[in-house]
Figure 1: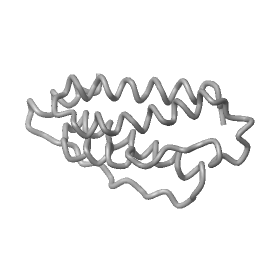
Figure 2: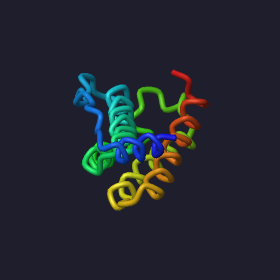
Figure 3: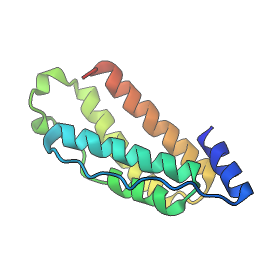
Length: 125
């Protein structure tokens, strides 16, 4: 669906203007999750505008180091699968940076959203 928005925008020769992402103002896990949101927003904009620079900006934000169990305030509340999902999410950044066509970007974006939803389903905070 997002790629269809981008295809239409390209076809009619218009590119929507998006507000600049706001840098997270908190640190720790909350700030890190806010970076995930910023990355997802930029990747979404990269598909819908369409814009390679917005897409690559999203990949760059996602490229930060993944959280480890020792980074969590209460590691007992986050299963090891959550930490593995976190690592997979950040690994997608490498693929996202290299993706130059819409089909590859859609695949990466869908993997990102699936990973995010899987983790949030088991950690509903």
